[in-house]
Length: 359
Image 1: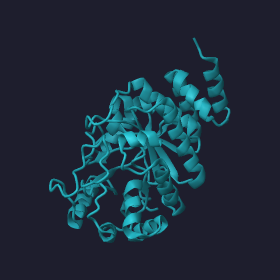
Image 2: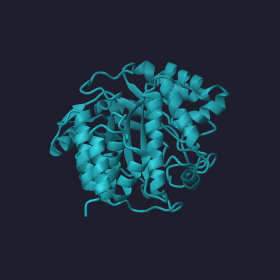
Image 3: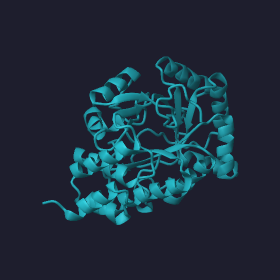
């Protein structure tokens, strides 16, 4: 039986009405994933070229795995002073960049654990060295929890931290570490990590300092329906303030440890999240599919449920076991097989601007 309220909400959304928090919750609880997908795809086609799907290519470089945040879902980190982890030097990072450029991946995605043993000069020296050697390389670096650590380390304002990083060579800022933006869930998943408001503050200041960014949601644990919608509300409000959020990526938790409660998210729920994200986040330009997490088959379906970009290929991923695409040719073929024209984008989501790698 068709839920009349679902139909009313979807019709209103396609007429340009902004979904309320209550609308989104009703769609999430009672909407059929196929109905949401049809509406989301129509919305996606109005916002972005219907026949195109964009992609980029980047190398993740995890500069250290020493971390004092100790998220319950993370198996990547090693305890500080354990002697088991690593810190990459400048030469090692530059070598990884050189390898990526040979594979036509002109973006460095620099991210690591929160390592209290590293001085601020480590971050700026790495950025400056890479920038000096590769002036056209796009450097996407750090995360809210990392820059909040730098704020404490330097005793300077967060704005000053971002200005210092930009001066050293950083181009854009990934909104990693969001997981679920409620303090109840953050205490369950990562009690030592930034609170909801601190995470949002870091993203807000990044936007104020002219750094384009991305955001995500990671679900599939103990979160409630209300908390999922609260997360989406935070992202939409953040974008209202900064206009710096270029994309939103739905992720599901991957089995890494047994320290937290994990549930398997069924494929239809993943597609429903993609669709709801496109409908609710009406001010975010792009919805991305992470093939690395969704896999190829589900990722292809998601391109027909409101997504218009694949966050691939990804060269070197140490935190998660990757199901992703490894080469540009593979990414192009994947998009074509899904029925779309592949468009190489710049890293601020300028369509078709393959050589536009700047800020």
